[in-house]
Structures are given as C-alpha cells and as structure tokens.
Image (cartoon, rainbow, N blue to C red; front, side, top):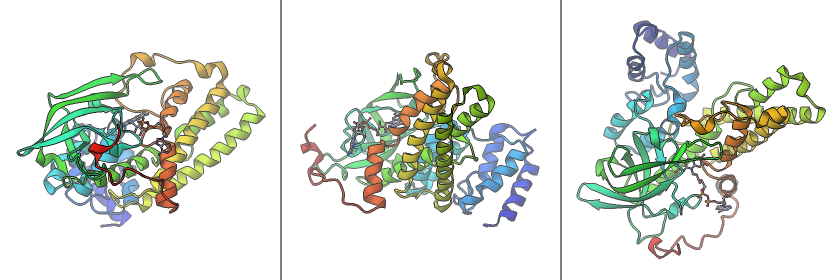
Length: 393
Ligand SMILES: Cc1cc2nc3c(=O)[nH]c(=O)nc-3n(C[C@H](O)[C@H](O)[C@H](O)COP(=O)(O)OP(=O)(O)OC[C@H]3O[C@@H](n4cnc5c(N)ncnc54)[C@H](O)[C@@H]3O)c2cc1C
C-alpha cells in the first residue's frame, strides 16, 4: 500500500472511527499505532504500513486538519529518533512488540547511556562493565551528559562485556530499565543554566538477557545505527521554509525595522539562503531513508545544522543589541524537552553552542565525512588491534 490517495482514505476512515474531539488522547494514539498510521514506513503490526517514508506527510496533514492530538515528539526525541530505528533493525520480534508502541505513543520516554567521562568522541573506549550472571547481566559504571535521563523509563545502553579483545569488539548493546534501583540520575547544569542532561551512575544494575539488542560483542555495529540516526534526528529535522532559527531572526527583521543595518542585512540574506539549501538537502536525505538505516551522510547534515544555528543565533543577538542579552528564569527550570528554537534570543545563542558537541562533535563528523563519504585516507589508529584492558587510560 504505497499510494497517497489510499493513505488519505485510510486516515479519513480512521478519523471517522476515532473522532479526536471525543476520543481520549492516549486511546487515540494507541489506535493510530494499531492502524499503521504512526510511522507509515515501519512494518505492518509495528505502527506502520511498509509505505514510503515520504507519504507520512499525507497522514500528518489529514490529522492536523482534524486537530488530532500528536505524540508530542519533542518529549521523546531520543526514543523516536534513535532507539526506535535501532530496535527495528536489531530487536527480536518480541522486543519490537514490547518496546515500539509505548515508545511511539510517548508513554515510555527513552534516553541514551553512551558517553562516559573517559569516552566521548572515542566512544569505543567506554569502561562501563556488563558481566553475565545466568540469564542476567550485572552492569557497573558511570555515564554522563545523558539528556532527559530524569524523565526516561528506558535507556539504550552500551557496555563492555569483553575487556580482553580490542575496544570495538568487546561492546554489547542493551535496553536498560531506568527504574532499576541501581540507576542513580543526577542533574548537570549547562551553559543556559538549566539541567537538560545528567550524570548517571549504574551500580549492580540487573538487565535480563532478553533486553540485549543484537549479539554479544556486536554492540559497536548496533550503536552505529543509533548514531547515524542521531545525526539525522538532530540535523535533518523536517521544517517548513523559514522554519527553525532562521524564521526567528527573519521575523525580528521584518517586525523591527529600527534594528536593521546594511551589514546585518547582507549576513541575514547569506544565512537565509544557506538555511534553505540545508533544509532542502535534509528533505532529500529523509526521502532516501529506509527505516532504521541511514548511512554516514547524516553527518554532513548535522555539521551544517550546528554551524548555521550558531551563526544565525549570533546574528540575532547582534541584531537585538542589549535586548539580545536578556534572559529569563532559565535557572529555575528543569525542562521536559530539548528546545533549540524556543524562548528568547539569548537562550537560543547559548543553547546552540551545544549543537556542535551533541551527537558527535563537528571535528569528529568532519572525519566521518572525509573517511566514509568522500573515501579519504583514515586517521592513523594505533589501538585497533590492542585488547581494551591493555590500553593506556
Ligand atoms: C547538549 C548535549 C547533550 C548530550 N546528550 C547526550 C546523551 O543524551 N547521551 C550521551 O551518551 N551523550 C550525550 N552528549 C555527549 C556528547 O555525545 C559528547 O559530549 C560528545 O560526543 C563529545 O565527547 P566529549 O564531551 O567527551 O569530548 P571529547 O571527546 O573529549 O572531545 C574534546 C575535544 O577534542 C576534539 N576531538 C576529539 N577527538 C578528535 C579527533 N579524532 N579529531 C579531531 N578532534 C577531536 C573534539 O572535537 C572536542 O573539541 C551530549 C552532549 C551535549 C553537549
């Protein structure tokens, strides 16, 4: 079923059977998942219809016109953008059935337990240990910069299961229950003053082997699916023309003629064009995506996203002058969601600083584009045949 007309008809039938005005929000979302109208490119029975991803817009437009509730996607960006495609690609049938529906409806929020104090760009060096005991794994270690861990019910986790082999080979990927008594989430304040992310201490956390994703020792490969999806999720968001940060500054430009200067006008025009090119490139990339399987090209999108957000938010602060430096009560907030474009100009300027770090730093993404998209020679890696336990730390 790949036809836009057919999809429109199905959506209308669904709306007639579940009128948004009189249907409970969660009942509506669960029924939408069951009808295959959640993410149409996912398989039948898992919230989709196996249709091309580009047809999602047909469903979304019908639902929006009917003022149907959505699944509040910004609250569960890591779940929707990263955990779900990884579960789809590597999960067992049972795991897919257990995790995907409450993830999509937003009943279960996910976070990402990857980075550690000693393993960020060099993620494969991670030291969190998972040791098998019967049909369970016992996990000990520390993770850091874990966005949204304070709201999460589940985490995607990578841990070392074999220290005696080279670093990339001894890693296994799990779904970690954040309600386990051994999980300790502590807020970390960031440059904006709020605590969007956390440090997470894992002490004798027990994970059933049935919550392992992929084979033992194959976690690095599974994690590549997550990371490639992460770059698309951060850098390749669907936006209307003049959506995102460029829309904010263009709006100020139109509404506040007294702030305009010739120099800022030139910069605004240049950034507007670059933002539009980037938006259209992201659109093309999304249309090429098969569910769960973006390649390294997403790194280029994420690079452009970070650079543009920083330049555009900088321009906006300059345009607004003293006003651009004002800030409200960010330090009092503990937001439920990551918000790149919300609030005021000063917030956007500060939050954009993290865009070139989260999801892989711009330096590391340049390496990925060089090696895996352009086929240039790889960086020298002296540790790739050394057992992880013998690496200098
Ligand atoms: C807002 C935000 C949210 C985040 N959320 C999460 C999350 O939810 N879960 C999670 O697991 N992590 C999260 N992170 C962590 C993020 O993935 C890491 O910060 C990032 O990968 C960089 O790692 P690091 O901080 O250890 O820096 P390092 O790896 O120590 O890098 C330090 C500097 O060295 C440079 N560098 C390192 N290696 C190379 C190289 N080979 N070539 C050139 N330059 C290099 C880097 O570019 C950087 O400038 C988040 C980070 C931020 C800022």
